[in-house]
Length: 424
Ligand SMILES: *Cc1c(COP(=O)(O)O)cnc(C)c1O
Image (cartoon, rainbow, N blue to C red):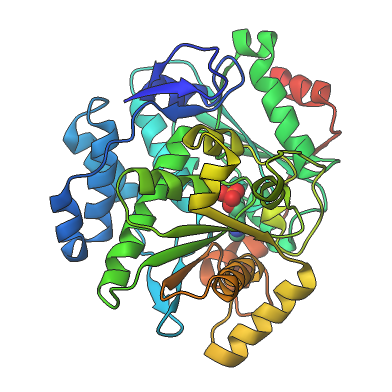
């Protein structure tokens, strides 16, 4: 698999290089040069395959030149060791529960897979690797959990002070071991900017072996395509209707992984990019102009992104907003609408959605209202309700709640981050 930079100024690289570097030297994101369609036989037998078997087939199709079959199998089996059940709410509406991993958010898929991929590529290396992650909550804990205890790797998390939920902060700051949390006096976009600057900084580059673990890393994106195939397999057992996926989106990694699955042959009629008040992509699809803005704080805080990084990849897959519109339909929703949607789903279907999933629900509803059609809608539920709502905490989260918070407070100046990295 060869990967190119979305800025088109850097040479193409192998998967190993793309995963270890995170960002391309020209500041672009890595994209696979070719996304081959999976063979017809794969789609014919999909319903009879397990999640891990599906994941392996998809991964193998992309990565077969990169490693031995048995190594990839081990990585897939260890990373994808929890389910992603498709739960029907009605005949035409279902929820893909992506929160059954160790940190109860869909980011476990990407983080666990990428950590094992990096560990595989690092097997013979002597230098310690520093993983730098900007997080608005869930990324950080998923990445920290994915890398926890992996020898030769330290994880530095940057999170915006006071902008993540109490339980998210506990998850980020209580891991210890090879994980350090930096509490940044700023917003998520500051954290993301600081991480980007670190990768472009010559001195840091020469002194440290730095890598990213945000959704900009292709190693995190690839595994997120697996569950689209698995959702399709589960849906086919119940319905012959065409499928649409509604994806609550912030940095658009989740959605981009869906677009990749579609390029690999997955029959998806439409993707709904469901956003909160941070509406840069819905605006782009409406006007054809991409205008990043400062992020706005909402109750679905993991999607409070004003300059979605994966948009660069989405743009590579389409030649204009017009062609993108054929695959993606997008709307933005307010907190009041989100609140009402959670209530509606609980009353109508006796199902508890947390705010991110509720935005996904709103996206599906709005699409079907404007485009009445005989499709079956799959809403991606990206986090466990206990992470955001007052429902009983699963044991995984109870444990960290009782541990003391340990973080290092820094300003949103890049200089502060740089000093910390060089001194510690
Ligand atoms: C990260 C996250 C999102 C947004 O996913 P993107 O890939 O950044 O679009 C949505 N919901 C939850 C719970 C998240 O953690």
